[in-house]
Length: 444
Image (cartoon, rainbow, N blue to C red; front, side, top):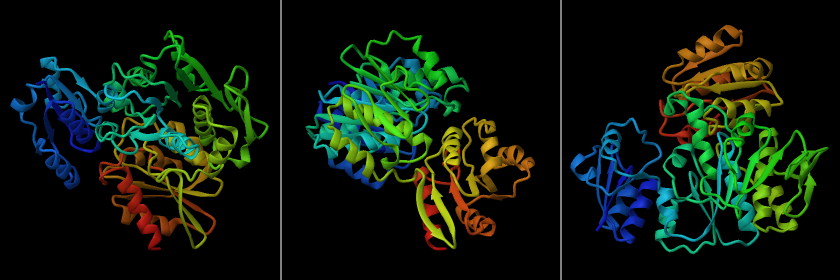
């Protein structure tokens, strides 16, 4: 009996453990942190051995294969021992893909992947497709397969960390939205290493597959020449229609293939430049999947958006509060600021990932009437933004942050939580940060 060790006991890890057990593996689960009660219950229900707050080498280094949580870096002490032993390490998605024949629509990018994944799923589900949602969003792919879900297709959001440990997995439709600096602390501050990770989305594609990508992205354009891409290329743009499968021109949203489709840009549910890219990518994926004109038009018009992504929370005293807690890198914040049409108080800060804030300097000057730094250590933000002459506050909890925002804000202003940074210095995760923001807004 082969031994499968799972490192990390959250959604993906526990799902992989249940699937491994079903496939006849001897399974052990180990987490250096505390495992949530619901996942302990799942492991106990399936009589899977587990440990928390430690990694026992004797129980890990005898593995035939290891499924690693995307959040565990290769520099972690136990991972260093695993790599020294030469034990194969894969992601949950790689493992799950071995046990299903479902078509895979896979979406990655530095920004916009959750919105695009959710939109593709919304379109296909509304069109009556037998479709599942997995990856960085939704339930574990491995768990869904273990439970015997017979979906014909899965829509999967993939992070660079998941892609790093995928080798034989095959995306029938691969979507690459953009590549901008993010998570560079995990890639030795080497942008090319991060870029190489994102480009793994096209790994194993052949002539029967499709590759949808943003043609205006300079990094993607440069990378294309390095790959002998076999899949059908489906570029999209909002700058030019020449050679594009999808584009927006003169207020019209257009997809040229596999059959022509168009609708008024104003009818799209999602607004802002970044959402034009997301809507084009999702629309092309839907058309390639055979979605009809009427179903596509209806779904693009009625999509409700994604929680924690430019989510309008409330208007209090003439001040609009927007939760963009998912903006965990500089580029995401740039898109949020670019979409602002009123004087903005920007909440920024958290666990810095090697950020270069120069990219948003111009928009901060143009759009912001106040800055609220929110983090355990805001020294980098103070050094960069302090000299700009914009009123600012240095805060270290969401309560302090909201108190500063209410002091600064005037009727007609927008308070925008778009932090540029990861959340783990003060919050459990990005969702916790957004929820705390929303709860305090509703108490105003």
